[in-house]
Amino acid sequence: MRLCIFLVVLASCALAPWSCAEPPPLLGKAVAHWEVGRQDLAFTQTTRGLQDDHSTKYVRVERYDPSLPDDQRWRLVEVNGKPPTEAQRKVIEGKRNRKPRKRPGNPPSVYLDLENARLVRETDRTAHFEVNIKPDAARFIPLDKLVIVISVDKATETINGVSALLREPMRIALGLAKIFDVDLDVQFEEPEDGPPPASEVTSDSTARVMMSKFGSPVEFTWSDFKEVPAYRGPDQATHDKP
Image (cartoon, rainbow, N blue to C red; front, side, top):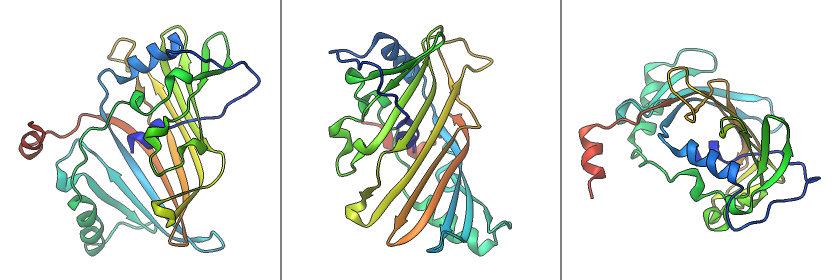
């Protein structure tokens, strides 16, 4: 999920692009600040199954919190506007929480082609950079079809926004699924109890993906973000040892 949240955009091509061996200094500093003290993200996931005419077939709301033990990370909150039954909770939560916990991912700079970032828009306070995904990071997913923009506050040298849109539909999972719409709007703010350059994802940030799985359209929406420390139980600590 973090990679999804950190892939972003909306670019104006009227300005001359950056082209250098190193990232633009302002962007490089902002990304470095972003990666210091990163935590995991808790979020609410809303899954909306659609009919062929895009009318709603079902709606499922779940909460993911990586600060909780493995068997409590996913919690089913609502099904079709009603509290879930015990049977529904057992099926959905059991399926979600049985999956192995993912180890912390690489920092965003591993995936972003910062060296070839372009300054596409600038104001007195903010610089907006278009950044591509590194070809090696894309693997079998054509992430080059994503338009990514990172907004940087000039005064604090911190990221204050990341956005992403899809240039054209892309197929994933060996062609079995097709993503045809991406809308990502992630905003950052400095925590009240922490000095700059630290920043946190705001709770009103949103991410949305429209896709077709085996021919059935589904909309996924992520909201109510909160940065939390990852759960470090005995099993996890043992697993992380070299």
